[in-house]
Image 1 (cartoon, each protein chain N blue to C red):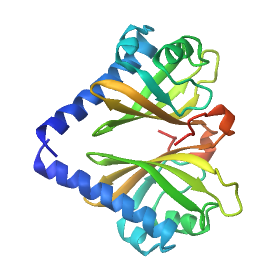
Image 2: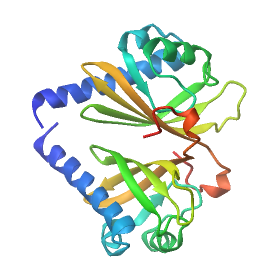
Image 3: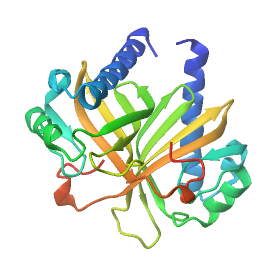
Image 4: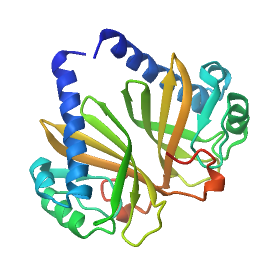
Length: 130
Length: 130
């Protein structure tokens, strides 16, 4: 691994961290508008491809106004994985366990995959899901 | 990042890759028995902590005898994330989208988290979930 790859990996991790902070904490889409590529490709069910359509979706999605608590953040080359607990406005406290996977190119988010699961009853996960 | 951290990250990635190959392709738990720590901590619902109990679970789990196709594999320090498509014996072809997150210490798997989601109808994911 070269120094430039390491620098890129760190930068990608920071871009994703700042994106979650922008969306879930500051409730501001401005940062995201600057880092999502115009021809962004979506693999998440019920969410669109393309920067403009995805930003509109994010403004109106069920989880808009919800919370996200990042539990693990991994970066490897062009990819960043975020393992987080997401709660929906008016939803239950445990919410969803989510892993988002993002691919970046030249500092822009170009592709997204995710997996979501409602956090089950504590009896089924003695150590908790996180 | 030092050379030793980079070496460790590569080694962790290989251990996890070999574990999936051992379990899903070679149908052999021997490799896993050697890399799971005795006091392994589980965060996956309905699966146990501890090496012995977890190996027994893996031998009898609904997905034993199923298939796994790894789509993305990320390693970052002590953590390895595996984004894969898993099918269950007798289950439908699309199966589940899964991200497993593993933490390793000194070449042993010490902790596991996961998120699972049935792959929905193609109409809901024009680009596919993977």
